[in-house]
Image (cartoon, protein in one colour):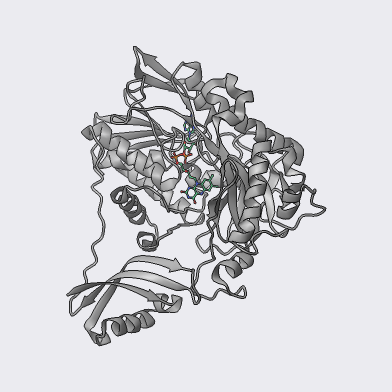
Length: 521
Ligand SMILES: Cc1cc2nc3c(=O)[nH]c(=O)nc-3n(C[C@H](O)[C@H](O)[C@H](O)COP(=O)(O)OP(=O)(O)OC[C@H]3O[C@@H](n4cnc5c(N)ncnc54)[C@H](O)[C@@H]3O)c2cc1C
């Protein structure tokens, strides 16, 4: 018989097999010998009380054998399929669109401006060590998209639970740890993501799909309101009638191209702020109420903060426990921060974006750019940060209390940001409404998480690529651009997703719509 249980356990009772068996048999008042298997369905940490507990949902197989069901995917050979889609961008949206296409027997042809994961790594090393940005190969561009060298947090607010499960199962099928299927806040880690992405690529190619690297889409041919083809690297014409645009939120040249061609785009509000770094020991102390030693079976603690200030929300974004702050610019002359962490999250720092909303009314100076106002605003702040910090990949930085009190930091501690930091008054580079909101936010966080507000924490600027500042509008049902037939804007760059899982889901759904006329929920 299979019994479903919900049980609260200490960390060691969850991770030590013998302890788990003992606890479950006590809970069910059964002899251990009768339990053949404990299948964990959901696992989450409850850090509200001490000692910290895990909440576990599990299926217990009592007097019954357990047979593991491996998830399989019906990836078909599409080598000779006449039905094909062209996908621009190999981020989560593009790759999952391609995988879904294979399941429907449709041939995916991907064009990616950047390089394969391995070669891309060399450009990241140059970026970190020499501060040189390759505009085609960086933390945002290249195989796997912005998700490849990220934290790989797979948490999403998406309500489409069936779709989330399918994405996670596909990741496990391509090599991710099975724990992502049960953890409430699953993550993969930067060190594991590249192999996984390479495995997805091999899947696509072995089924007869195509992936072309160093292949930037530079133009789109449109006739009578329909897509007819594209141009790659200014010299290769490719005919196609179904064009999936999955280029992410950092491909500004795509927004400029669409603007030039008169293809409708809209302003979309987004968020901007700074990336804050504390020591991980401090965050563990605050969250786990421990003396800084969290124990073997608890992961580095994370946090989530939000405060409604006078006129806008201030919140934590993409928090990376045990992580590193990364230089995420996509062009020379700008600096941008974001964060990543390895699978073990074992770096001594913890970082998070602390950001606030940028609304249309906030950027009146940029309204002449129409729907691209947010892009130009974002660019201006990134350029100012580059200028003030030394015209390389160093970022402007300030200690937290110094920022709130308007004092330039006399010195700065070592942080994880490899290219280096320069002490400045961040109010000199951040727009006034952002400075004001962040100051109020940090002051409020003082009481929300006692100990968080400290001059040991360093703010790095600017966290500007939180989501797309543009929406490429599409029809709700057909996923096609509202004015151009055959153009399917998807993922984060189109303004329809935020984060790895939601971009992947958007990619899958787009193919479902193309093939079936509607997405399966
Ligand atoms: C450092 C970092 C850490 C992050 N951490 C997380 C995290 O932990 N969890 C999470 O959910 N999200 C995280 N994100 C965000 C996440 O990576 C994105 O939300 C997600 O990758 C968006 O997917 P996408 O497919 O829509 O676009 P992208 O991943 O941006 O992919 C777009 C792709 O299109 C390519 N491209 C662009 N223009 C062209 C062109 N003209 N021709 C051909 N190819 C083109 C790009 O090279 C890129 O590969 C992180 C991002 C960064 C940068």
